[in-house]
Each structure stands twice: as structure tokens, then as C-alpha cells.
Length: 341
Image (tube, rainbow, N blue to C red; front, side, top):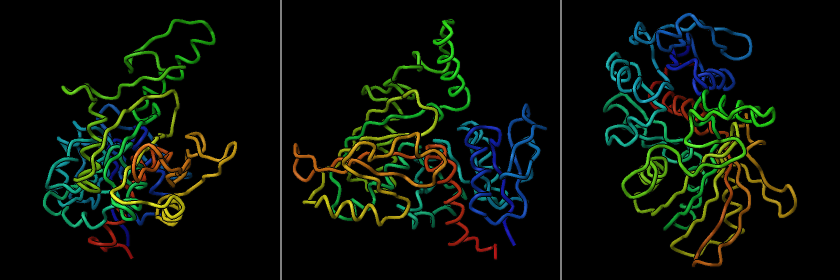
């Protein structure tokens, strides 16, 4: 016996990935409902390799017949339909930023803070963290257990898929336009993204940081440890899928580089590829379609006491969004729902 699962935002890039991962991981389902806005009603989306689902309008869906709803439709839909689904007895796992900092909503990365999921009953809603935060805290957790992290400095190199389908299309059309000498049109980014990098993701805040950078700070502190000091610079790069991060970590006590490598290699959700030779590391191109978060370039930072540098790469549509949401659903089933046999 399985669950009735709805994917809200099923026509978007993350929603489609959720459907794919539900099938890949053989999540126990009886029925899967593909939901989106009314304008997408009647469209067809793939569920795994051999099944096709017809999209229904989310506003017409009866959530009382649904056990789990994976939301991938943005903050507006989460705000409007999340409470409706939760009140009907359906547990909401939301990928937007709307509920992340709500003290009554657990913000979960299953490899990092699984016990926090027990608080979901307050609102029947669970939040999925920002894509850049998710992969970073998977890497930080075992190191924090090893040596207690004091401070993190991170620079991200985030792919355009983090901004959705239209952003991916813009990178493609701009790249093509350059080669055929057409005019460059900029619609989804503040500047040309093709053959460029843009140090600006989300809106600017009063202190000069962007909201994306603020999310990394606030979410890391909520998920991992409120005492960790963190500063981030988030950059959009002309890569279709896969986020990369250069992470500098300062510990409260000495951490042996060799032991850190061993701990990372043994930790769930991580794969270490770290050879000090040409091509002895992972790039975003190589992580696409993989469940793992990859760690490379592990080395001491001699400029601070107890410092370590790592390179962290992950498929942002997977661990940064869809995979983490499905993993939360799996954790929910094991700890609370226990319906499937």
C-alpha cells in the first residue's frame, strides 16, 4: 500500500524533476497527481520513463484524498494552496522560500537534521531549503561534528536552471545569438548571462547583500547551528545545471586534513573525488543527474587558525530541490506516516 502524492508545479523544471525522482527512487505511490495553474491544465508530463500524466488545475484538486503534496510552484502558490492542502490533512513539502523561516515549520535536509521533522505537525508543512544552502550543509554537517565550525566564507557559482525554464532558454538563445551575430536580448537577468557571470541573485538588501546570500546565512543557522557565522557571495554563471561552491571553513579547534577527508568520504549524500592532478575534481557538468553532492579540492587554509577549503558541486535540480523534497517525503513516511508496506 502506497501514498497518494501530488506534485504542484508539475510543468516546471523542478516539478518535472520531482516526478522523475519519485519513479527513480521507487517511492511507494498508489496515485500521483500532476498539478499546475489553470493555464497548464490538460498538458501532459512524464512520470518516469514510461508513464504520462495529464495535468490538472491545482485550484480544483481535492487535497483530502492526497497524503503528501510536493510544492514546486513558487511562493505565491505555496502561500495560497499550502494551508488549504495542510488543513485537508495532506502534508505539504514546499520548495519555495515562503515557509523556510517560519518557526513553526521545520526546514529539513535529511542527512543533516532529520529529527527536526518531528515538528511538522504544528502546521502540517515542511520547508525545503534554498538550492545553494542544501548542498552546502550536507558538506558542513560532518565537518561540524568533527571540529565545531566557527565561521564559513562561501562563494557560489550557480547555474541558470536555479532561475527556471525561461532563464535556461535565455542562456541558450543568447549563446546562439552571439554565434549568428543576432541582437542579444536580456529579460530574465540584469545583464547578459551568455559568456558572462553576474554577481547578483535575487533582490538587494539594505546591507548590500542579496536575498540569496541572506538565505544561505539564515537557513544554515536554522538547519545546522545558529552560532555559525557565515558570509556568502552568490554568482550566476552560464551553466545550465549544477551549482558549485568554494567554501572556506574556520573551526574552533584543530581539524586534521586527512581526517576531514575520511569523514567526508564516509558521510551520507557525499562523494569525495579529490586527486591532486589534472581533472582530479568534479565540475558541474559531471554532477548532472546524480544524487550525490561531490567534494573536491580539500586542503588546509594556512591564512587562518584551524582553516579548511573545499570545493562542493551538486545538481541543483536534484539535491538542491527535487531530490531533497523526495528524501523529506521518505523520512516523513519512515518516522510518521508509516502507511506503505
